[in-house]
Image (cartoon, rainbow, N blue to C red; front, side):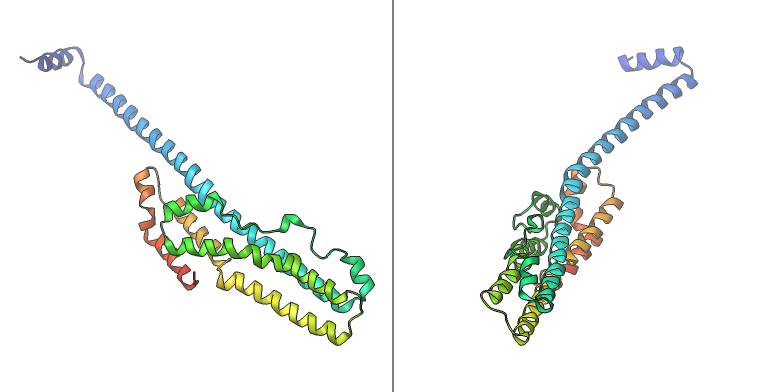
Length: 237
């Protein structure tokens, strides 16, 4: 008789079936409980590192760019309108500097770390190019609202009182340029669509139980995520 047979024979004599069932039940519960705990910790780690620090932060960063551009777009239109309606002295008193002093509304052209993290899991070249385009161009587009408008208006008032016709001409020119830049950020760069699609992807990731790095590695193959990324192809990058 082998050692294992002896052990089972002893256990069979010592333990009744109910006792064995309880022990086995406890062992299985412990095993599956540990497995569930491990999967939960993996999910929390993945969620914190790749979703919160990646996609969620990238969405917030792109939204902050959009908010600043929206604010400065509206404010620049107000300045242009005041230039047309106010006399020279009143205008210069209201806007004494040749650029806005609201430095918090400047748009940086830097590439955020959240983009690097997001790019590593979405693995989509067109998405990367679209985002890089936004980072590169948004700063220069916003600079028009922050500085170019006021510089142009101050130059127009330098040492003279322009006629109503001259003011109207400059008003139309700058207003149209401001609107063109806004359309460029929205339509050509996809400043609004990218945020919308990232939010769709984030919602999809909340539906998927990404509790392993194997699943994380392959999320770019998910059909719904691919559909959201495919929608960005309308943007020329």
